[in-house]
Image (cartoon, rainbow, N blue to C red; front, top):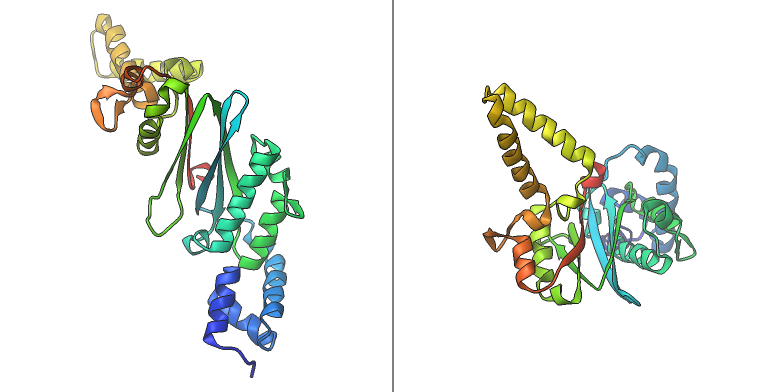
Length: 282
Protein backbone atom coordinates (compact mmCIF):
# COMPACT_ATOMS: atom_id res chain seq x y z
CA UNK A 1 0.00 0.00 0.00
CA UNK A 2 1.30 3.46 -0.93
CA UNK A 3 2.69 5.48 1.96
CA UNK A 4 0.79 8.79 2.14
CA UNK A 5 -1.54 10.53 4.57
CA UNK A 6 -4.68 12.63 4.45
CA UNK A 7 -2.42 15.65 4.88
CA UNK A 8 -0.53 14.64 1.74
CA UNK A 9 -3.80 14.43 -0.19
CA UNK A 10 -4.85 17.85 1.07
CA UNK A 11 -1.48 19.42 0.25
CA UNK A 12 -1.44 18.08 -3.31
CA UNK A 13 -5.06 19.04 -3.87
CA UNK A 14 -4.38 22.60 -2.73
CA UNK A 15 -1.28 22.76 -4.92
CA UNK A 16 -2.92 21.46 -8.08
CA UNK A 17 -6.60 22.19 -7.60
CA UNK A 18 -7.40 18.64 -8.71
CA UNK A 19 -10.27 16.65 -7.24
CA UNK A 20 -9.77 14.57 -4.11
CA UNK A 21 -10.34 11.23 -5.85
CA UNK A 22 -7.92 12.09 -8.67
CA UNK A 23 -5.28 13.17 -6.17
CA UNK A 24 -5.67 9.99 -4.14
CA UNK A 25 -5.38 7.79 -7.23
CA UNK A 26 -2.31 9.70 -8.42
CA UNK A 27 -0.59 9.29 -5.03
CA UNK A 28 -1.39 5.60 -5.05
CA UNK A 29 0.06 5.21 -8.52
CA UNK A 30 3.14 7.20 -7.50
CA UNK A 31 3.63 5.20 -4.28
CA UNK A 32 3.25 8.36 -2.24
CA UNK A 33 5.75 10.45 -4.24
CA UNK A 34 4.08 13.89 -4.38
CA UNK A 35 6.21 15.18 -7.28
CA UNK A 36 5.49 12.10 -9.36
CA UNK A 37 1.80 12.27 -8.46
CA UNK A 38 1.67 15.87 -9.69
CA UNK A 39 3.22 14.74 -12.96
CA UNK A 40 0.63 11.97 -13.27
CA UNK A 41 -2.15 14.53 -12.74
CA UNK A 42 -0.66 16.77 -15.42
CA UNK A 43 -0.48 13.91 -17.95
CA UNK A 44 -3.99 12.79 -17.11
CA UNK A 45 -5.23 16.32 -17.54
CA UNK A 46 -3.59 16.69 -20.94
CA UNK A 47 -5.19 13.45 -22.14
CA UNK A 48 -8.63 14.65 -21.09
CA UNK A 49 -8.32 18.10 -22.70
CA UNK A 50 -10.44 17.08 -25.67
CA UNK A 51 -13.17 15.84 -23.34
CA UNK A 52 -13.22 19.23 -21.60
CA UNK A 53 -13.59 21.23 -24.82
CA UNK A 54 -17.38 21.47 -24.72
CA UNK A 55 -17.75 22.05 -21.00
CA UNK A 56 -19.19 25.33 -19.73
CA UNK A 57 -16.88 27.74 -17.94
CA UNK A 58 -19.32 29.97 -16.08
CA UNK A 59 -17.22 30.53 -12.94
CA UNK A 60 -14.01 32.48 -12.57
CA UNK A 61 -12.75 35.93 -11.67
CA UNK A 62 -11.88 39.38 -12.98
CA UNK A 63 -8.50 41.01 -12.32
CA UNK A 64 -7.47 44.60 -12.96
CA UNK A 65 -4.41 46.79 -13.37
CA UNK A 66 -3.86 50.53 -13.82
CA UNK A 67 -0.56 51.92 -15.08
CA UNK A 68 0.61 55.46 -15.72
CA UNK A 69 1.14 56.61 -19.30
CA UNK A 70 2.45 59.77 -20.93
CA UNK A 71 -1.15 60.88 -21.52
CA UNK A 72 -2.51 59.86 -18.10
CA UNK A 73 -3.43 56.30 -17.15
CA UNK A 74 -4.30 52.99 -18.79
CA UNK A 75 -6.57 50.43 -17.15
CA UNK A 76 -6.89 46.76 -18.03
CA UNK A 77 -9.52 44.20 -17.01
CA UNK A 78 -9.13 40.48 -17.74
CA UNK A 79 -11.68 37.72 -17.14
CA UNK A 80 -10.39 34.18 -16.58
CA UNK A 81 -12.89 31.33 -16.28
CA UNK A 82 -13.15 27.89 -14.73
CA UNK A 83 -15.89 25.29 -14.51
CA UNK A 84 -16.35 25.45 -10.72
CA UNK A 85 -16.08 28.05 -8.00
CA UNK A 86 -13.81 25.66 -6.09
CA UNK A 87 -11.16 26.22 -8.76
CA UNK A 88 -11.87 29.95 -9.10
CA UNK A 89 -10.79 30.53 -5.49
CA UNK A 90 -7.78 28.21 -5.72
CA UNK A 91 -4.53 30.11 -5.08
CA UNK A 92 -2.86 28.58 -8.15
CA UNK A 93 -5.73 29.70 -10.37
CA UNK A 94 -5.68 33.22 -8.92
CA UNK A 95 -1.90 33.40 -9.39
CA UNK A 96 -2.29 32.32 -13.01
CA UNK A 97 -4.95 34.98 -13.60
CA UNK A 98 -2.58 37.64 -12.29
CA UNK A 99 0.21 36.33 -14.53
CA UNK A 100 -2.15 36.65 -17.49
CA UNK A 101 -3.02 40.20 -16.42
CA UNK A 102 0.69 41.05 -16.25
CA UNK A 103 1.10 39.60 -19.75
CA UNK A 104 -1.77 41.79 -20.98
CA UNK A 105 -0.19 44.92 -19.52
CA UNK A 106 3.32 44.11 -20.73
CA UNK A 107 2.23 43.21 -24.26
CA UNK A 108 -0.26 46.03 -24.70
CA UNK A 109 -2.85 43.51 -25.84
CA UNK A 110 -6.32 44.94 -26.35
CA UNK A 111 -8.19 41.91 -27.73
CA UNK A 112 -8.40 38.21 -26.90
CA UNK A 113 -6.36 37.04 -29.87
CA UNK A 114 -3.44 39.25 -28.93
CA UNK A 115 -3.76 38.35 -25.25
CA UNK A 116 -3.74 34.59 -25.87
CA UNK A 117 -0.62 35.03 -28.00
CA UNK A 118 1.15 37.26 -25.46
CA UNK A 119 4.30 36.00 -23.76
CA UNK A 120 3.66 34.43 -20.36
CA UNK A 121 6.33 32.50 -18.50
CA UNK A 122 8.15 30.17 -20.86
CA UNK A 123 5.37 30.24 -23.46
CA UNK A 124 2.22 32.17 -24.25
CA UNK A 125 -0.94 32.90 -22.28
CA UNK A 126 -2.65 30.09 -24.20
CA UNK A 127 0.14 27.70 -23.18
CA UNK A 128 -0.16 28.77 -19.54
CA UNK A 129 -3.89 28.10 -19.50
CA UNK A 130 -3.51 24.72 -21.19
CA UNK A 131 -0.83 23.63 -18.72
CA UNK A 132 -2.90 24.66 -15.71
CA UNK A 133 -6.02 22.99 -17.12
CA UNK A 134 -4.02 19.79 -17.50
CA UNK A 135 -3.08 19.83 -13.83
CA UNK A 136 -6.46 20.92 -12.46
CA UNK A 137 -8.58 18.74 -14.71
CA UNK A 138 -11.09 21.48 -15.55
CA UNK A 139 -11.59 23.52 -18.69
CA UNK A 140 -10.03 26.95 -18.16
CA UNK A 141 -10.35 29.95 -20.41
CA UNK A 142 -9.42 33.61 -20.74
CA UNK A 143 -12.61 35.01 -22.21
CA UNK A 144 -12.59 38.79 -21.96
CA UNK A 145 -10.28 41.78 -21.90
CA UNK A 146 -11.12 45.47 -21.66
CA UNK A 147 -8.67 48.35 -22.00
CA UNK A 148 -9.44 51.96 -21.14
CA UNK A 149 -7.29 55.09 -21.27
CA UNK A 150 -7.83 58.56 -19.89
CA UNK A 151 -6.36 61.36 -17.82
CA UNK A 152 -7.51 59.41 -14.75
CA UNK A 153 -8.65 55.78 -14.69
CA UNK A 154 -10.34 54.22 -11.66
CA UNK A 155 -10.85 50.48 -11.08
CA UNK A 156 -13.52 48.96 -8.87
CA UNK A 157 -13.66 45.23 -8.18
CA UNK A 158 -16.87 43.79 -6.75
CA UNK A 159 -17.34 40.44 -5.02
CA UNK A 160 -20.77 38.94 -5.64
CA UNK A 161 -19.85 36.28 -3.06
CA UNK A 162 -17.55 37.17 -0.13
CA UNK A 163 -15.95 33.72 -0.31
CA UNK A 164 -14.91 34.12 -3.95
CA UNK A 165 -12.58 36.46 -5.87
CA UNK A 166 -14.10 39.52 -7.59
CA UNK A 167 -16.59 38.58 -10.30
CA UNK A 168 -17.38 42.09 -11.50
CA UNK A 169 -14.71 44.51 -12.65
CA UNK A 170 -15.22 48.14 -13.68
CA UNK A 171 -12.95 50.78 -15.19
CA UNK A 172 -13.94 54.45 -15.37
CA UNK A 173 -11.99 57.10 -17.23
CA UNK A 174 -12.38 60.76 -16.29
CA UNK A 175 -10.51 63.98 -16.78
CA UNK A 176 -8.40 65.01 -13.80
CA UNK A 177 -11.20 67.20 -12.44
CA UNK A 178 -13.53 64.23 -12.29
CA UNK A 179 -11.16 61.97 -10.36
CA UNK A 180 -12.96 62.69 -7.10
CA UNK A 181 -16.22 61.10 -8.23
CA UNK A 182 -14.69 58.31 -10.32
CA UNK A 183 -14.93 55.69 -7.57
CA UNK A 184 -18.61 56.36 -6.85
CA UNK A 185 -19.39 56.24 -10.56
CA UNK A 186 -17.52 52.93 -10.86
CA UNK A 187 -19.56 51.45 -8.01
CA UNK A 188 -22.72 52.64 -9.76
CA UNK A 189 -21.65 50.97 -13.00
CA UNK A 190 -20.99 47.68 -11.21
CA UNK A 191 -24.55 47.68 -9.89
CA UNK A 192 -26.54 49.15 -12.79
CA UNK A 193 -24.61 47.81 -15.82
CA UNK A 194 -25.07 50.67 -18.32
CA UNK A 195 -24.36 49.75 -21.93
CA UNK A 196 -23.29 53.14 -23.29
CA UNK A 197 -21.75 56.36 -21.98
CA UNK A 198 -24.34 58.74 -23.46
CA UNK A 199 -26.84 59.09 -26.30
CA UNK A 200 -24.11 59.89 -28.81
CA UNK A 201 -22.48 56.55 -27.98
CA UNK A 202 -25.54 54.46 -28.88
CA UNK A 203 -25.16 52.98 -32.41
CA UNK A 204 -27.58 54.32 -35.01
CA UNK A 205 -28.95 50.86 -35.78
CA UNK A 206 -29.76 50.28 -32.11
CA UNK A 207 -31.63 53.58 -31.92
CA UNK A 208 -33.52 52.84 -35.14
CA UNK A 209 -34.58 49.43 -33.86
CA UNK A 210 -35.78 50.83 -30.53
CA UNK A 211 -37.73 53.56 -32.33
CA UNK A 212 -39.37 50.93 -34.55
CA UNK A 213 -40.36 48.83 -31.54
CA UNK A 214 -41.66 51.88 -29.68
CA UNK A 215 -43.69 52.94 -32.70
CA UNK A 216 -45.18 49.51 -33.32
CA UNK A 217 -46.00 49.12 -29.63
CA UNK A 218 -47.69 52.50 -29.50
CA UNK A 219 -49.78 51.79 -32.62
CA UNK A 220 -50.74 48.35 -31.28
CA UNK A 221 -52.05 50.03 -28.15
CA UNK A 222 -54.46 52.00 -30.31
CA UNK A 223 -53.06 55.42 -29.46
CA UNK A 224 -54.22 58.35 -31.64
CA UNK A 225 -51.98 58.74 -34.68
CA UNK A 226 -51.21 62.36 -33.85
CA UNK A 227 -49.99 61.36 -30.39
CA UNK A 228 -47.66 58.62 -31.62
CA UNK A 229 -44.52 60.79 -32.19
CA UNK A 230 -44.62 62.28 -28.69
CA UNK A 231 -45.28 58.91 -27.08
CA UNK A 232 -42.40 57.35 -29.01
CA UNK A 233 -40.15 60.25 -27.97
CA UNK A 234 -41.06 59.65 -24.33
CA UNK A 235 -40.35 55.94 -24.64
CA UNK A 236 -37.00 56.62 -26.28
CA UNK A 237 -36.10 58.95 -23.43
CA UNK A 238 -36.89 56.08 -21.06
CA UNK A 239 -34.70 53.78 -23.13
CA UNK A 240 -31.76 56.19 -22.96
CA UNK A 241 -32.17 56.55 -19.19
CA UNK A 242 -31.96 52.79 -18.90
CA UNK A 243 -28.88 52.11 -21.06
CA UNK A 244 -26.81 55.33 -20.93
CA UNK A 245 -24.56 55.84 -17.91
CA UNK A 246 -24.86 59.62 -17.76
CA UNK A 247 -28.68 59.47 -17.89
CA UNK A 248 -29.18 56.76 -15.28
CA UNK A 249 -30.36 57.76 -11.81
CA UNK A 250 -27.29 57.82 -9.57
CA UNK A 251 -27.07 54.84 -7.20
CA UNK A 252 -26.67 57.06 -4.12
CA UNK A 253 -29.35 59.53 -5.22
CA UNK A 254 -31.71 58.02 -7.83
CA UNK A 255 -33.44 61.37 -8.41
CA UNK A 256 -30.19 62.83 -9.73
CA UNK A 257 -28.67 61.66 -13.02
CA UNK A 258 -25.10 60.37 -13.00
CA UNK A 259 -24.24 63.07 -15.55
CA UNK A 260 -25.42 65.78 -13.16
CA UNK A 261 -23.36 64.32 -10.32
CA UNK A 262 -20.28 64.36 -12.55
CA UNK A 263 -21.05 67.88 -13.75
CA UNK A 264 -21.31 69.11 -10.16
CA UNK A 265 -17.77 67.85 -9.58
CA UNK A 266 -16.55 70.08 -12.38
CA UNK A 267 -15.21 67.07 -14.26
CA UNK A 268 -16.24 64.69 -17.03
CA UNK A 269 -16.46 60.94 -17.56
CA UNK A 270 -14.81 60.02 -20.85
CA UNK A 271 -15.38 56.27 -20.91
CA UNK A 272 -15.99 53.10 -18.95
CA UNK A 273 -15.73 49.32 -19.18
CA UNK A 274 -17.49 46.60 -17.21
CA UNK A 275 -16.90 42.85 -17.11
CA UNK A 276 -18.99 40.36 -15.16
CA UNK A 277 -17.91 36.73 -14.97
CA UNK A 278 -19.91 34.50 -17.28
CA UNK A 279 -21.60 37.20 -19.35
CA UNK A 280 -19.18 36.84 -22.26
CA UNK A 281 -19.84 33.07 -22.26
CA UNK A 282 -23.62 33.35 -22.13
